[in-house]
Length: 92
Image 1 (cartoon, rainbow, N blue to C red):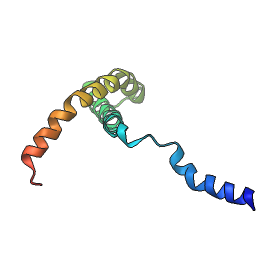
Image 2: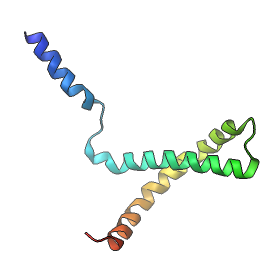
Image 3: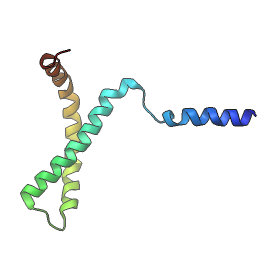
């Protein structure tokens, strides 16, 4: 009986065991936003400059290597300014 109770308790807590604490929300948001936007912008810029050729994905990933860390730093730096602008623009 104790083993099944322990496994049920573990099963209930397991889905959240890999999650980060809520205090990391701004950094996680910045990471995901930067990852998605850097990839999309890398793809668009490579397509605009070189066209969509056989090596398109390779060129996008090469551009992404530089774009992702830069985008992450930029999102971290710009987020507080954007939050203030939104607060000034949107009713509570």
